[in-house]
Image (cartoon, rainbow, N blue to C red; front, side, top):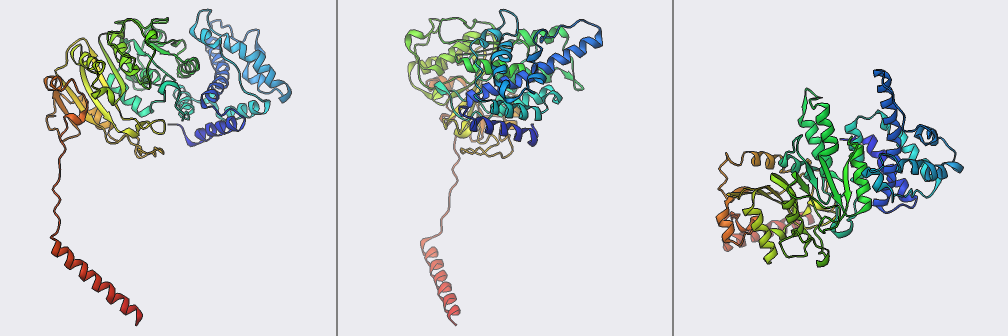
Length: 483
């Protein structure tokens, strides 16, 4: 999506930050985000001023009285003054943007400008100027930020790691969010699911390349449709920046432990679409866990599934990544959660993914569950994904970037029309009665039939004859060489 020239500039920016002492990827991305956002602020302000001039409307610049906070002005300052000016004047100005009670302003309170030297700041400014962000359209600006985030190659706390974008795209396509839907990610990280859901809706509402959303519909989409929560303050700020870089002016991103009773609390029966890859490493202290949960467990992967069930509105749909153990775990809590998904929801699909999908972060085997709240399951559609379009080793080398994904989406769409009873295939359907008999087990290996091919071996006497003949040929060849 990004051309090689832009990618090389982002890579160069990373190199400068690492050599400049900011080796923690999360910290580096946060500081890069601030700089890119500072540049974008002036570009957006100039654009609005030009539009107002064209329509004859009055426009008050956000830089009124703070002209020296404009990128075009301070970026030309000499080394002896630029760092102090950005740290002590420009950054506080940026941090205090927005209405008094805006989420942006609230979560920027604890933000710090951490670029240590004037030389690193100047080098970063020059590279960002070379990216020509002003000349890029909204999609390219978003892709640029996504590529920046893709360099996060270390797992965070509690098993957090970025979901590959093509996997996110597949899950968004399965859930198919609409313009009037409220969309939630209860453990949003960098907001990859929310960004892709937003883009999916925009693309779905274009005719001949032009948006058909009314101003009112676009305002609702931008301000009252996309919701995310994360326990990590830095991730919350990065998620805010990511959504704003993609054109969402007032993102609803809140910081909090969504598995506890503390505020902010995710409302029950509210969201039409839930998309998530929640952290599933470790467990919580029992005292922290919300009383809303009926399943008695401290395992986060099970608690998040119940949380999503409660959060969904009737007929709401959810696409979520779970560790493979959720599918077959034999504890009472595991069985309770699976029974809930099969009796209080319509479990539409279980897509088993190969273990290499999340490398180099982790080699854990995972699956995607897709379910709809409010009606019982009749049968479950299973798919054994063998390739996601990249090598399954730590290098994750590009093959075609798709693998089985187009087939999964097509087969899922046509699952009711196709005869999917052949359990030797990659995909098939199982009646809920059979699943119930097997303790609500959802692992594909429990139902898939492996077709064994009979291997015919030659008779021992024939093999012995061939070996002797080969030896004679070798001896003859050696004698010929001696002559």
